[in-house]
Image (cartoon, helix red, strand yellow):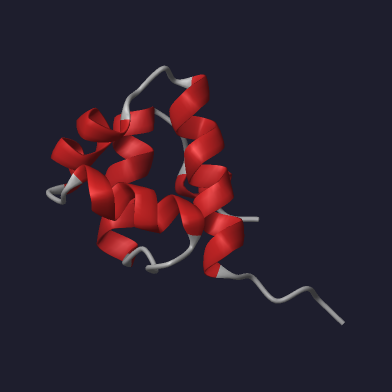
Length: 70
């Protein structure tokens, strides 16, 4: 049976890609049109990313959307 994808899984990938790209939470927040606190919530899995914001994050981090998915 395939593993269930969680918000925490996506958030961990988002954080790893953000850190690897040397992008701060405030910079990513600006690209997503949210507060830096919301980026923190995405990264911890407290809040889910919408498809639109997932795409915007991938664009800002210069990666594919699939790179952010487990």
